Each structure stands twice: as C-alpha cells, then as structure tokens.
Amino acid sequence: MHAILVDKDEALVWSEVPDPTPRPDEILVEIHAAALNRADLMQRAGNYPPPPGWPEWMGLEMAGVVLEAPADSRWNVGDKVCALLGGGGYAERVAIPADMALPVPEGLSMVEAAAIPEAFLTSYLNLCIEGGMKAGDTVLIQAGASGLGMAAIQLVKALGGKVMTTVSTEEKAQFVRELGADIVINRTTDDLGAAMDEHPVDVAMDCISGPGLGQCIGKMALGGRWIVIATLGGPETLIDVNTFFRRGLKLIGSTLRSRPSELKAKLLGDIEALLWSKFSSGAVKTVIHQTLPIVQAEAAHAILQRRENIGKVVLVVKD
Image (cartoon, rainbow, N blue to C red):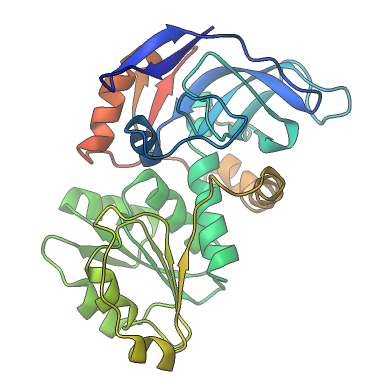
C-alpha cells in the first residue's frame, strides 16, 4: 500500500510501505478520508512521535470501510467507521483496535466523519473530564475557528454552557457566532483580559498559552480550571501565585495522544452516546474548510501552517 512519509528535507512523499497486519483484537480499515490536525505539523518536524505500536506516518483520525474484523467484535466487513488513531491515517489502510472505531453517523459523508474523532474527543476529554464542565458554566475556547474550536463550541452549547472564544479575523468571528459562541474576542483588536473581567470563566481550553496565560488565569471565576493542550503562543508565562491559590484555581496540562487505548475507547463510547444522534439530526456538525487528494498533503499542511482554515482540512484517499 501507500502512505505519506516525511523525507530528509521534511517534504511529504506518497510512498510504498508494507501492508498493515491486524492483531486478533484489531480491525483492518480501507481509508477513504483522513483529517488534519496541528499535531501533524509537529510530528512532521520531528517533535511529536507516535506512541509505540502505531505507524510512523501521520494521521490521527480517519473514516473508511472495514476490510477485516474479529468474529467477536461489533464490526462486520463493509461497515463504515471513523476512528481515533495513534498515527497512520495518511495511508490507504490502517489496522486499529476494534474498540477505537465508531460507526459513521447516519447521513454523514466519509469526509465529514473523518473530522469527528480527534476534535470532539479532545474537546470532551478536556472540557468534561479534566475541566468538569457543567450546564451554566462559562467556557473559554482559544482559537474558536479551528477544527478543535469548532467541535468545542458545539459541545459546550450542547451541554448548556456559555461560550467565550478567541479568533484572529472578523470572518472567523462571524463563523464562531454562527456556531453558537456567545462572546467573541478578536485577538487583533480586543482585550481578552477585559472580557474576562466582565465575564469570569469557569473552564478554559487553551491551545495558545504564551505570555498572556498568566494574566488571564488570575481573572477566572473562583475554582476555575484552565486546561493547557498546546503552546502555539509560546511555552512561558508569569503567574501571580497569590491570586492563583486564593481563588482556588487549577492549571492542568493535558494531551490526548498519550492516553491509554482503553481510556480512549471509553471516551469514544461516551461521545457516541452523547453526540451521534445530534450529528445525524444536524444539531451538531463538522465544518470542512477544504478537501484535497492525499497526494496533495503538502498543500493541505500549508493551509494549517498559514492558519487559513476555518474548520477542518481533510485529505481524500479514496472517492
């Protein structure tokens, strides 16, 4: 089969690789679509290696058709599935634990389904499990127009929360308002700290971090939980610890990729029960910025590198 490999110059090359061989508890899937994530850019640069046992090539989520399945699993040959991966989505086929796959929601295309697992599971893990979000909470979501932001905004609204989110352009501001965001902060013109003074935040999911984190975390509501999932704005900040402990705040670091497969499978079951009917009804949706053929992975990565996307970028492997 073929997969996208990274050559010595960090170029993406559609290359021949060995076919995957599923273990007894795994299904073999023919990949039709694979969604991009910013973590792919980190892996390409050599900074985010896959967990042990997963392919070396990129791809954290995909949708496709089951080619082989264990007799005692929920899957049959021909079933349409989407799945969270430790890696390996930029390819023609992948072998995955049977409980790491979910059915493609009724009415959704392969492209739409490929954009679900990573973004919605990351949102659920961090907002609901790490952040303990409940109905009525005010939730800050950094980079609301990203694929992850798109998922997080809709999850918070589905659970009865109030969304504050940050964007970088007016076009993106309009997009997140249409998704249901209540308070929109344009980072180029508005002051996030001032907005938090007016609307104290109970839970924050932060992929930006950087110098502004320290100032803003001290403006949270009593008992606020600030979850850091990436440091796109830089890895360092200064925190007033007096404010931090007096307000009972929690600063939590979190990644999804390194979690045990058993936990990921449980969380996938949670979001299936919570959201699958909403996907089918259209109450919750994936937003696709652009699709490209898998052989144009280089161009797809460039969209993320320039931060042009509103929603998800998806590679089409098989029509």
